[in-house]
Image 1 (cartoon, rainbow, N blue to C red):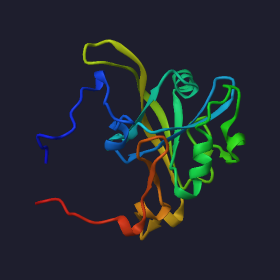
Image 2: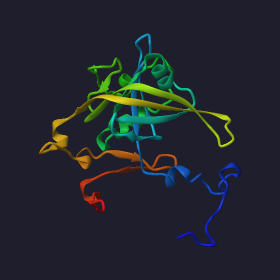
Image 3: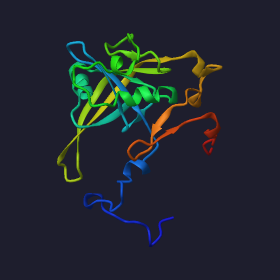
Length: 207
């Protein structure tokens, strides 16, 4: 319920709070753990907290990069990438891949993760991740403000053209969301949430 004493602010003027609450309010958010490859063959792996799915058929996923980073440059050049599910067991390795490393650095090697070939794209999959989406670029859009001024952020949307799921994630052929204990970004400097079986509930849609 919005009350008269609610904290009010206009983002352009600052929140007047110790930390901007936007990232914490819009959350938890799925993590776009994106692997890509440069035209010269250098592997890249990085997590993005502005990520989600946008369509069923064809399946589309997307992430936003604040700044023109190696991931975006690689995808623009090759038209391909892989999304890898970030789980609680992989949280430290995922966090390691967020380090600001030189562009020639292989984050797979840096984080101790295992690159394995994809079937339809050149970018490597994370072997340790229980789910991988192979994707082909559909749109690369520079975002803009309400007054149509371009900002230093790019939205990358890709069509999922191949899916890899570990067998233990399937129960009677049905994917179990909580089985992998996926983690989600929850704002501040490093807050995350974990999906566990005891936090799940079912709510059928109205007829």
